Every structure is written in structure tokens, then in C-alpha cells.
Image 1 (cartoon, rainbow, N blue to C red):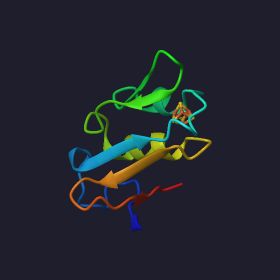
Image 2 (cartoon, rainbow, N blue to C red):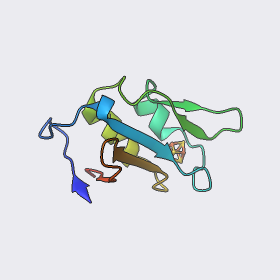
Image 3 (tube, protein in one colour):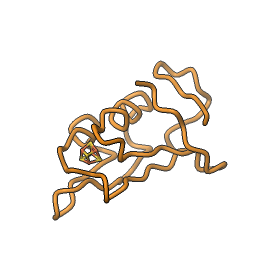
Image 4 (cartoon, rainbow, N blue to C red):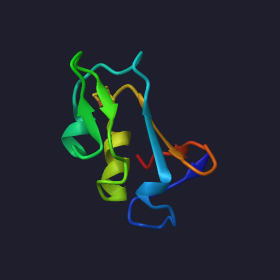
Length: 88
Ligand code: SF4
């Protein structure tokens, strides 16, 4: 698993990343969209869906993903498909 840390020590840009949410895990508590509302949105059923991972700064995108209490959010490198280790 690749490692990526907040603070811009990666060459990756948010546009190079893909975000997915495991709908079987998501409990809809809203942590992700409260931290990065540009990248996550509440669906009608109360769960989260990824919207635009390139919209927030990278650090905040990763903070939002790492804040998920049930680890439902995955962030991958779009070019390799490899999941990134979240920073927290
Ligand atoms: S933080 Fe996790 S559990 Fe909460 S809404 Fe986002 S994906 Fe769902």
C-alpha cells in the first residue's frame, strides 16, 4: 500500500486520485462531507457518495477519508489503482 501524508509530501494531486465508499459499511454519520463537502455528498438514503475528489485540497480530502469511523472510504491512485494508506 502506498503511503501519503498530509502536508504535500506526495507528488500526487487530488485529480489523480479516485475515491470510493463501501455502501455496506457507511453509517451516514456525515464526517466525510462535513470535512470535505466538495468531495462527498449525502445521498437520499443518508449514506455518502463521492463527488469531486479534485475539489478540496489534498490534505483535507485525506483527512475526510481518514475520519470515517467505519473505514468505508478508500482513496486510490487513479493511474495504478493502488489504495493509499490514509494518514491517521
Ligand atoms: S464518514 Fe464514513 S460512515 Fe460517515 S458518512 Fe462518510 S463514508 Fe459514511
